[in-house]
Length: 149
Image 1 (cartoon, rainbow, N blue to C red):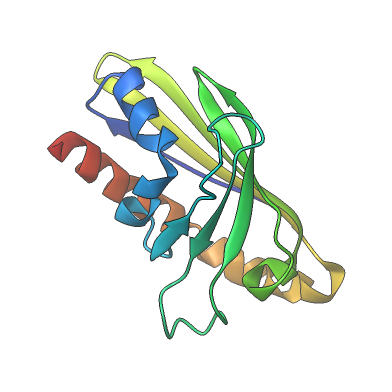
Image 2: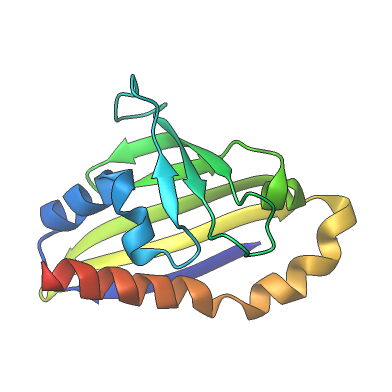
C-alpha cells in the first residue's frame, strides 16, 4: 500500500533539507511522535539509525519505533522501519520516502508511506487508507514550522 501527500514550503530546498535532516525535529511536525532517541555515536547518513517515541497513553505500548536511513540525496531521503514490536508488528516492511523538488514558490515536499501489511493484519488496510489525510496534516505542520523559522 502506498499513501502519499505533498505540500509547498516557501523556503529553499536546502533549508527544508537541513530541517528534515535533523531527526530531533520530527516531534515538532509529526503529531504521532513525542520524542526521538539517537545513539550517542550515530553519524548522519545512510545507515543512520534512530528511534521515535509515541505519546504516553496512546495505546501503542511504549510507542517505540526504530528506523534506519536507507537512501539520502539532495532530492530527499528514504527511512525504513526496522522494529518489529509495538505498532511495527503490523508491517512486513515499511518505508517513508521524502522528496524535495524546487518550485517557483519554494520547495514541493512529497511524503510517501509505502508498506506491506503482514497477512494476519490485512484487515487494517481500509482503516489505514482512511487515515491517509494524516500525512497531509503532518506536512501542513511541517510547512508552518519551517516557514515560521
